[in-house]
Length: 60
Image (cartoon, rainbow, N blue to C red; front, top):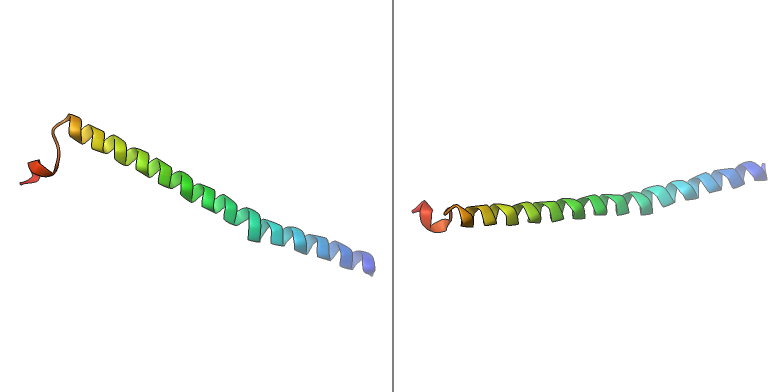
């Protein structure tokens, strides 16, 4: 019976490590990656607008 309890404890600890530590780290990494991509795309859009004469002054 002690062997089954040891196996159950191991499975529980591994599950906690995955869902409480590893998964949130992966999600944070994905969010950070999305933010970096969005900022880069915004910079490219701003450069395009500046090069082609678009801007706040043209909207009036």
